[in-house]
Length: 103
Image 1 (cartoon, rainbow, N blue to C red):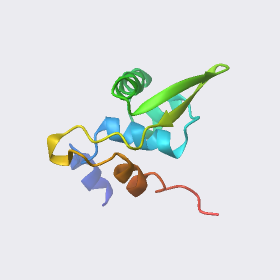
Image 2 (tube, rainbow, N blue to C red):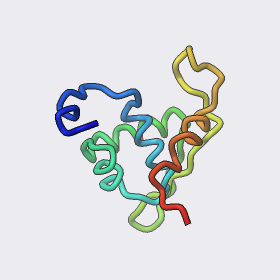
Image 3 (cartoon, helix red, strand yellow):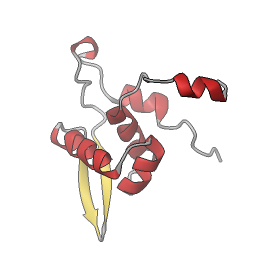
């Protein structure tokens, strides 16, 4: 994709919820600020998404000092009926290791 193609992108296949979940899978100790920068949304939007994911049982939060540590529930199923019964671990397995440095 070249620079002129970037201007025409108006939608993507993954939602912000999926991108935040994948970001947390990559680094469960990262700050909301870092997730927001990586996903390209506001910190407030990330906080709302983390709250949604927590309430739906996709993650838990543990407060450690001034930071949060997130734990994912990878067995939680996707929410849409077309993916009913499939665990979210399938998404994480496909995307979480992308862009990570390989030792």
